[in-house]
Length: 247
Image (cartoon, rainbow, N blue to C red):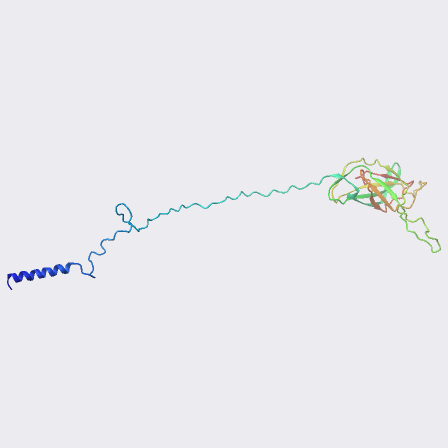
């Protein structure tokens, strides 16, 4: 091969080499992966590329939870007890009972007198006040009638519970009058002093005790009933002590 032929061959070899070094379709690029593609938000001439959304940055502000303070705890206030008003005792507040004392003798003015105590019990719901002397009225006859078969009816005087007995009532000065405060459920007393109708010095006296009595307290005309007061007074005379001075 001459010089011309050698040059032709050399050119052919050189051409083949250049063609092989150029990129072939489907061949891998050795520079692939060494440079990252530009991001979608790359600005061209100071403006975002058309079709690329503008990122929005939202800021979330964290607030502390609202706490409602509890009111301070206070001790419960104790209820003030209601004090019932004090009023004068009336018949509706009181119940009466009587008792003849054992022996029952009281010496006054050289006379031997029997003592019959009368108890007044506060049955109401509030305290009440007593002061002074009681009023007293006697009725009927505490007797048991026995009639013989041949006697006509009625054969005797009878009980006569509504017949008022003659009575002289005297206020005793053994104890002065004073205030007596009766709480609900409490009891006070007064005394009836009398000379027995069986006494040798007695000229006139009914030996039959009364069937019932009515007691009255100052300021109230309504009676307090008392069944069978144990009195047999000479000359129908009874001394009455003040409230709270039952002897």
